[in-house]
Amino acid sequence: MKLGDYHKKRDFKKTTEPSGQESDPGLTPLIFVVQKHHASHLHYDFRLAIDGVLKSWAIPKGPSLQPAEKRLAVMTEDHPLEYANFEGVIPQGEYGAGTVEIWDRGTWEPISDLKTWLKTRKLEFVLHGKKLQGVWVLVGFKDEPKNWLLIKKKDILL
Ligand code: MN
Image (cartoon, rainbow, N blue to C red; front, side, top):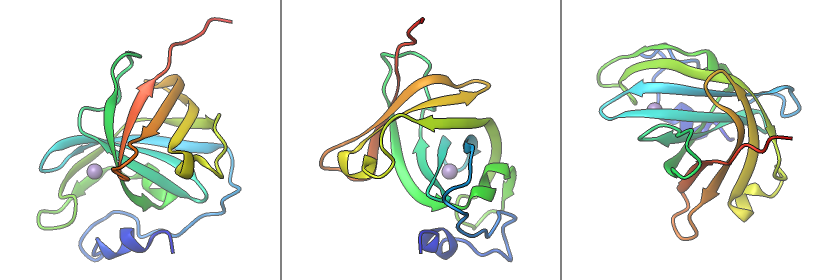
């Protein structure tokens, strides 16, 4: 079950985060969200709806709009789609304790094949958010499975 790790890490009697379930993988449009998370270390959680869950990466410095600036993105556990609506305070002592606020959200479109991106370790896509738009790519490190880079691609004027 894709959300096993998500459920294991949280006590839903103590946190107001959604417990959630896997959604229909065919749901469209595909959503994305970036949540600014003031936990023990401030970071930005970048989440893309893929196969009925939110595939998630923690980005310590947040996404950069500059094409030359690669940002480390550490893959974390899948989250339920409902998590895209979550804002609030995760109580002290709980997993991810701190404040979560929605920093950007919208829809996204894959350019890469969603059946093979985990194997090829490359996911190219278009974001339609308020702050984040245009073509982006996530590129996975070869020998560190959790580590990826999020890179903005240059906008091409057509
Ligand atoms: Mn986080």
